[in-house]
Image 1 (cartoon, rainbow, N blue to C red):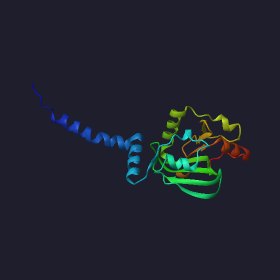
Image 2 (image 1 turned 45 degrees about the vertical axis):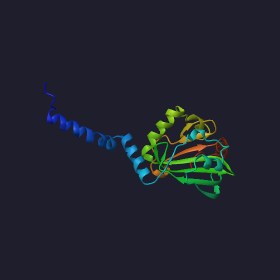
Image 3 (image 1 turned 180 degrees about the vertical axis):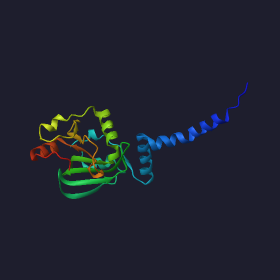
Image 4 (image 1 turned 120 degrees about the vertical axis):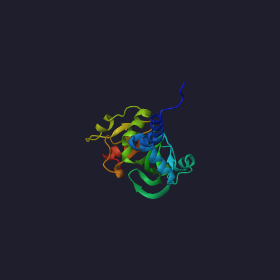
Length: 196
C-alpha cells in the first residue's frame, strides 16, 4: 500500500491552507469587518459592548461611568438638542461593529438620548444585528407624526431607537440614535424628529 501523497495534491493543500484565510479576510464582508476590528484594536481604539435598547432615562452620568469605567468620556456644558450637557467618547467598535464615537445627551443628571456614530460601510451589518436582537423595525410610528418618510424605528422599553433605512452618504451621517420617552415628546412637540 502506497501512503505517499501526490506532490500536486500536497502543494494545492498547502496553498489552500495559506491562502484560504487571506482570501476570506480580504474578499468577504465578515472578514473585512474582523480585519477592521483587529486594526482598530491595534491602534488603541476600545470597544463598547452595550445593549443600547436597555438604556433608560433613570440612568445618570455617574452610573454610566460606573458601568463603563474604561470609557474616556469628555463632557461639555451647554444647550444641545436634548438637554444641557453632552458627553462623548471616541471608540473603535460598538458590539463588534466598527464605530467612531458614542455620545450621551443629558438633561440635568438624567440621560435623555444617546448617539452612536458608526462606520457607514457597516450599515447593513448594524441593521441586521438590531433586527436579530429586537425584531423587525416599525416605520409607521413616526410617519404619522411627521410627513416625511421616516427612519427605521425599534421600540425598546424606554423610548425609541432610530436608524436610517438606507446606507448614509457619508460617515458623518452614519448614526444610530436612542431617544428616551421624554426626548421623543420634546421632539414631537417641536415637530422635528430628524437625527441631530
